[in-house]
Length: 430
Ligand code: ATP
Ligand code: AMO
Image (cartoon, rainbow, N blue to C red; front, side, top):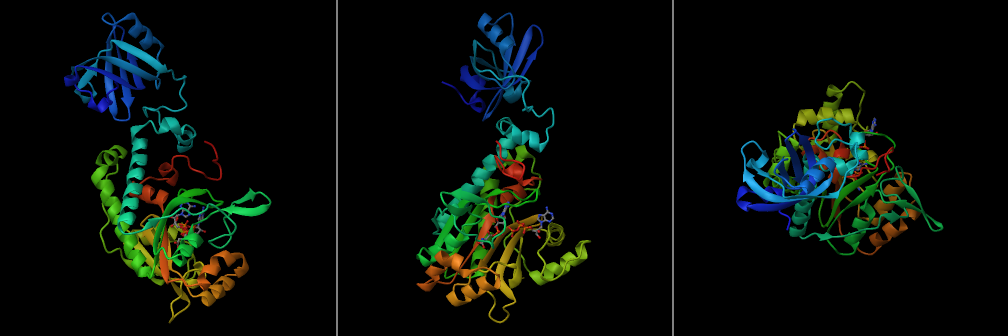
């Protein structure tokens, strides 16, 4: 029976381990191998005169990153990792690795992100990289737990769709028998339809697809979105849910992933403080005007440089509220007293936008009017509009980018580092 390497101690007596050959060093009369599994590293010490022919042959034949099974007595020794070593009675090479390796797993040779992504299976063997995905998993668990406990129903909506949700650009067309179809940009229309279905609180964690044509460090062509929609709620209520969710998720990661956080070398991991400031869009623009070279005016999108300038001023997570209706989607509800602005918000990390949301327009006539105002044809939204004619409560929701959440939480410089097999304009394989 194989013992996980972290559990091997001198008290084990004899142990059988299995894992990857992290390093082999031959010093003449003595050879050392470091064996690594998911739990840790152990030194295997081979005094050549004292071990069997089988062991000697295996040490000679083995290459770095091969998978081996080793058994023998465990001894305490100060100098070795974990204060113990294993002296092999047998070494079985289960799977021999070719040389040279496409990537140096031991990280002695630094590699560009592209090289790492090309050999992702080797890259993730690095404990520091595996730690990112362990934290991503913990964060998703915390999000599921939080939303489930808050009474949300998890839903799964189609990813092959007939219409755009966010206005028509950035769509991936696909062949769907004899029809025109697209990959879904957002579960927006479906989560809203679930409000007409009486589900009241729904969420989905799933893929979204956007044909973004620029290569940036924060855009993916396939991203993971965490979406919620809540009936009888306004934008302020779903902003509170979002803030509490972020705090809960950071808290869970801090509590359960301290080893991974240390491994990645995140020095300033801190659970955000409650009470994210709410900055009106108009004020955000004023801050940006002072902070950036390029011209920016009321009514413009907030550029990446503006995001960073405003973020530097705000210091932590914050909301941008009261957006001009003109630059938000048709489904955002306009303020009654000033329809030029709407009940939409973005939730920001100092580095970038993490989430967008809004109270939605649930009144059929106004919704149709807003669709037209955006230059869109209500007929192509008939499947979405129909539920608005048969009893739909007021509702609000948001979408939160899971990849950006992990990226900003861990201070990663590129969103691709938070995704196992990222999709971008230049990357469809692996
Ligand atoms: P959303 O999800 O709401 O679209 P986002 O955070 O993905 O937000 P975008 O709206 O895609 O951000 O981009 C924000 C702004 O940055 C936009 O004004 C967009 O035109 C601009 N932008 C995006 N990528 C680039 C780029 N490579 N170079 C210059 N500007 C860019
Ligand atoms: P939005 O378009 O702002 O809103 O998307 C919500 C969040 O999803 C993430 N995101 C992305 N992450 C990486 N690469 C991308 N190409 C990408 N596109 C989006 C971001 C963004 O903040 N329907 C609305 C949400 C709502 O109102 O409920 C929507 O899709 O973190």
